Image (tube, rainbow, N blue to C red; front, top):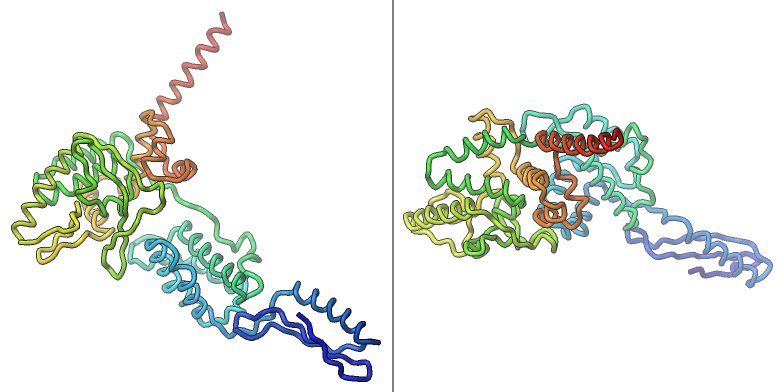
Length: 398
């Protein structure tokens, strides 16, 4: 609102206030005008106030990007799921802050951002020690996170414009995701042959169960790791998915499922039932021998002998990578089992909406992202269409 002070001799000082800036100081302006009367001065003050409210606050904040990142963490990241928090924090504190941290957020320019992502696209350096380039999909996700952070900075009044908005098409990271491969039918058979040829013991049974179950039901690895024996119904041949696992401070924890639709009942086959029962016998014997108890009743446990712990999210991935190398089978990660479960189900005439519910997706569009092509099904599809065309052609010839 505006206030007026009569300075005399037809001069007036106008004070206009519009809330507070991000640095906590009043967002205000002053101007000295000349007017023939107080009434005329009020009219001018009203016009100035309307114009002032249209402008973004002139921020004089000394907040650095690193300081804002911590504010973003507290105000926004803390509301996300644990796995999303972990991923975003890793990128913020290991990638964005080391580069932008000392820059005042009001001084962060489009050029700063363009330079960073152009360097990242050239260097493609990973931080996890794996011997391969950082993917373009990951680079886009880092850009998306930075853009979201700066959108919040605009919403919260720290800056007036998001510098990401002015990036040129050449400088803006593209939404490019490499489609991970799946196993074709012959490769899947080789995997099953090797998996079920393993010696019958506790460790091998656990891995047989986890892998085959993942290929059958398409559940998330965290949903499987969080399974308890109460979730397994041997008589009805089903499991109940109602929670998931995540990691915090290198410890595996349990949370609610990702979305409401993730709570679901999954039906299993006789092979899974037998693997569950065999695994339970081995687990009970192991607990007895080491004088341990499993009060939460977790199906999958870490192989430590002085306490009971859930395995890490990466435990089965490490075993799988070694197993595939040993048997010279093309690498597919644990999450790839989820894609293959969806693809094989759909290729065998399972309706798309059933596959959607099996995966625990909210909408079919998400399910479509998971689907790949089986060459055998593609050949069959071509044959079906060809037969249909043959009938039309033959009918026309007659």
